[in-house]
Length: 390
Image (cartoon, rainbow, N blue to C red; front, side, top):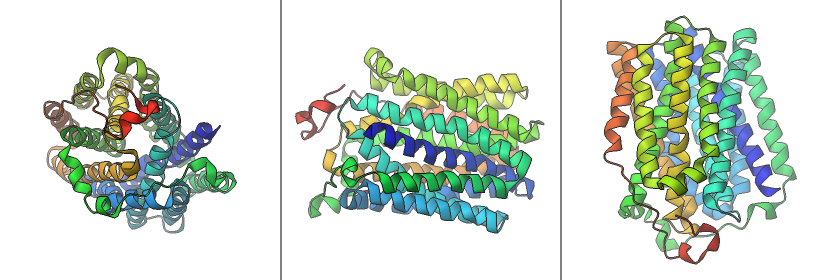
């Protein structure tokens, strides 16, 4: 019951997040924003989390998941309200700034809560990311359809309704469902970056950054590419949703794949698979070819996040999970913040098609610097039966 409720909250948050993001790019393109300006929107989403994720992680360890999730949802409601009141490029910029920080509060709260429930962590995190992928499947196609037929105000009002449902769920759930906050010792809370002395944790964080930044670039720039080759907004939303559906499928097999291949080899394979998919995108404009490529990309990117997330939790101490997740998300947002400027520059100078080619080359290169060993649990974790995994 606890798992189902938490997964439901995560699903609704993901639907709103992934539904509004392509609409932001489509509306920005419609009001005349350049490729570089759209890249600024992507970077704005990552800016505040890049600065605050570690601090938010420490706050999570101190106040617990319920309060932090509530704060995050309220922030999302504020961010989604801006384009309703002031439908303009600058309202979208405000939306992305507040949305990025608010989602972090919800995301790391759910990651820590679900990852520490009784059971096998690979299966728990697979369920978490599976519901996230379902949200990625539903969000773009639903919100793109609403935007195409009713405009941005109606679309974002729908997002607010979903967020209010989350608030109601949070009010109903008893505090005991969330577990007790595990406070870190004062000496530990001042040395977050020392966690990176663990080379495998560092590599897992880099992998996570590669996957999340490339995924965000796809969500942000594929609508622009799709428009340039004559695709309708609803068709673009369908392609994005198909990519998410492929991620759902592959995550159903995550536990078995880890057992068969090992986590390190599997992560390297997913990065290579994703790199090839990105390189193929600018070579095609046919909708069916792009659908097929989006499936391949979903299969590749679909495993990168959950595998690196489980790995990061497995090699760190449970009482510092909030801090570790905050550190991981800091690196994610740094990559999300910087990559639009880098690749957006390529897109502005050489055309939108070149952007996907360079993303693929970047991921291909990163594969050779992020090879992971099998999990090496911390001494504190070795005593916990529920996380005695590979």
